[in-house]
Amino acid sequence: MARPKDYDRDDVLISARDLFWEKGYEATSITELEERTGLNRSSLYREFGSKYGLFEAALDCYADRIIAGLFTDVRRDDAGLGAVVALFDHLAELFGANRVISARGCLTVNSTAELAARDGRVRPAAASYRDRLRADFASALTHAAAVGEIEGSSVAPRAYLLASTLMGVWLTVRIDPLDAAALCETVAEEVAQWRL
Image (cartoon, rainbow, N blue to C red; front, side, top):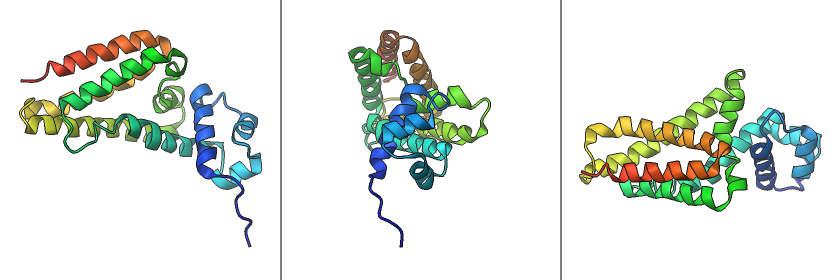
């Protein structure tokens, strides 16, 4: 009979996620993961299969908890331009309020920049993230078109533009959080001007 686990998987994932977010995948050692999670190497490998398995689970945890939280209003059925404007305004506030944490950027975008060119395993997660951003923005813009805020023909190109812009914002915040905050404010102002 298997022994019951004496740890909480979610707590382990959050600890590992935050370490990968702070340091990146390659710079994070198994020893650091052991220290941060409180689990030894064999327990981590038994639960997640490998360091990369833990990393993939941490990326999923990030998408489910951090990104989903940021996109709550954009993902509502009745979202429109106001929800998109509010997202970029919120990011501007976050970036201005805590520059140290903001300078971490986005775990998924950071991982894509760090690994995608030489490690094909990260590309599906990166593509999924990009596609989800596009879909979320398209959904909000489709609602905006349905209520007459924008032309329906502008939904797809604008959703692509917003997703790419947000991914760029996540890189910009790593360089200069205050500049990224100003960029988010500019994006919010531009989106507000899309109203017919």
